[in-house]
Image 1 (tube, rainbow, N blue to C red):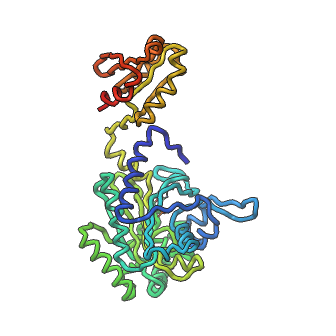
Image 2: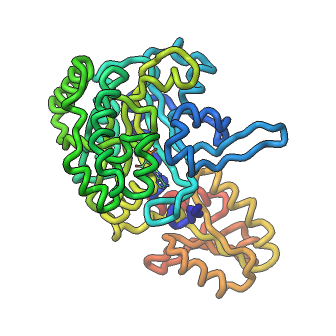
Image 3: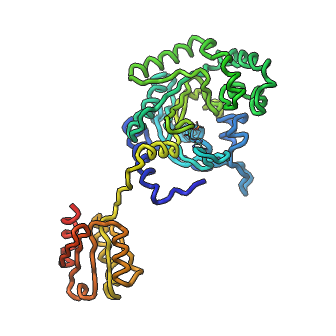
Length: 410
Ligand code: AMP
């Protein structure tokens, strides 16, 4: 779990604001769910045989005896909220977005943290492929907004209850003969979650995958039509994509469309999503179709940063306040308050008494203007304005301070 330090905030602001702006332009409303939920929500929604639920949830028993978990993802909580507040009643489909920390007990490595941040959107209440496309398009607008080019979109379908069992059986038939050559994890996955065999990065498993059957050969008519329509819509929108018959995702709730976004600078994907028409049922409700995506903000920030390594953080502070003498120091906070209420960001180093030490701080802050307030100025009701670029100084009356400062910041 990482700190996000002051020097990094510029990137978080840039990406955070872009995410909000783009989601709102696409008419998504912001939703915030708690960081802590009942562990059963994720067990039922994501699936007990997934890596997330099996190994990665931070869960514990409360004093009251409930088992809760820090949220490992955002979709199941949004669906819980959908039911709890009957959100479908207010808008159908419901279009919401979220942004915030998620928690997974993973082996920490580059691009994988135990607390990370996701921006995600969900469209709940309609199964039409036009909404799958809408989710993909809002992501592409987000990447565009943060000026990430060369985004690669991989896309696949996982079929539905009708066609998926036949495909799963074919897949198991294929792997049964080769089971002994699979890695330990895949041998375990074979019985519990055969699709995940396609997802394994181990060399032997990857080699074996080359000959595995693909779902496109087993899709039912409805799933076939759904997938074809989606591809037509995104092609109509000039979206470049790469069909990937082996793309499956780590959460059980996906059906039909699944997709992932990649960027050349990042070994792992930047984000992914898909359709989850059975999630509502898994959580004990009626069937309500849905589609969504989650993008990893750390990975996006790394990619954006890589492209803009020479961009310096823009300094908000342009004014530095220097006070010399007890009397001046005493009146300083009040006068700085006036400037701040007028919207001027003012820096200071009032704990330092000497003029020299404070001027050093002015230089370090790289501001445009320093205000120097000493005994004489207190007595006269004036202040010295020093232009740090030219070195020129001028004394002005305190009553005109805001106006004089604004003039120089223009
Ligand atoms: P998922 O919810 O697993 O589909 O993940 C969606 C996106 O969240 C991924 O593509 C990553 O960008 C990001 N993500 C997932 N897990 C982590 C992690 N442990 N550390 C950093 N980012 C993550």
